[in-house]
Length: 470
Image (cartoon, one colour):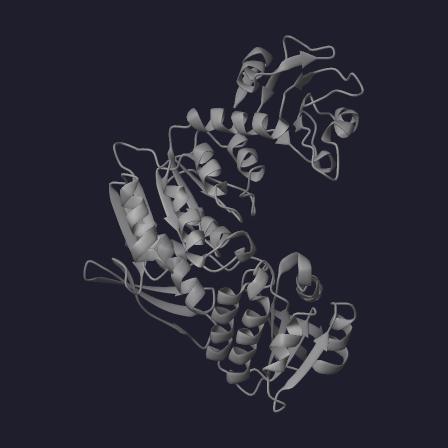
């Protein structure tokens, strides 16, 4: 969205500093809060944190071609700087302004897991019905959301955003920016328990997404997983309490019903969905229940919006799992030595881990071994030992042949696994790739990788295998 400097200063409640060019015009789509990734003609938002002072990078940003900076101070007296009291708030005010000028249909998605895949899946589906904009990657917090809103394509018919949280009140702040016409909740799991007194409080935090659903042609819509924890007693009632006119549920108990799913010989998932007695068959490129629910949610969105569900299901069949989120690859380590890699390494929390282990069990072995590289799980606070032991019990009951646990908490998981399986503990990922490729893996093995992204870093092992595959 292009605007002149006077308009921008007004939106931000800012003060021009340095030598300001009064004829300057800017494009909000060209905005960056990371000077390392800045491109010529960008607006640089100098965000500060406990670790760094964003204003210290203004001069560097200008050298790289930034046309304007938004900052709380201007230490180098650089030209074309707008001073604001709070750079994050100013960023959000700008994102809100762009959103209020968008006339298309907006979808907001939250949940404990599957937000990014669901967002990209829904966006892929909608792209066949009209021009579609969607937020980048996992930009779903108080900084990523205004960044995505600033880049919003005002000519798009549809826009899809995801919203994340780890504290109560965060979704409320984000939905005030996004102002969706349709709000969807994928699931509710006991994540970030260190910040909540009870599990149900997480459901109430997710239900904040229903607070600012705004009408589009007199319609407000909620799409909710009927099988989610607290769906009946918190999610659905909260949606109705907020005055949402149309509440559509999906899942095994939903209006858009997940009738059946099964992994086929080609390592794809055959899915059957039923709506008002009509059956839709779909083959998903992802594996198992998790991807069945993703497709089911997207079908529910299509149905809720009055789109052609049959056409939507055909489009969904083209969408493959994202890197780190269930992507399946054949990796050739050397001539005649291939393995199947299931890269689910983006994050690891108990419920998603259990889904993944169950899915791994549904994959036909065909003489191959199943090897699970499991990094410690994060963001579960006081439940850590209990949940790691629970995952260990699931692995013990599965047909996984080798379990490699990474991180101190993984010891609890390995304690539950019998000596009939090969189990290996490693404090960190150091040396694990070489150990796998040189002494553990055999031709045709199935290697599954999952764990907390930053604390276990098992994604780095997956990345090295994908580099080999490339």
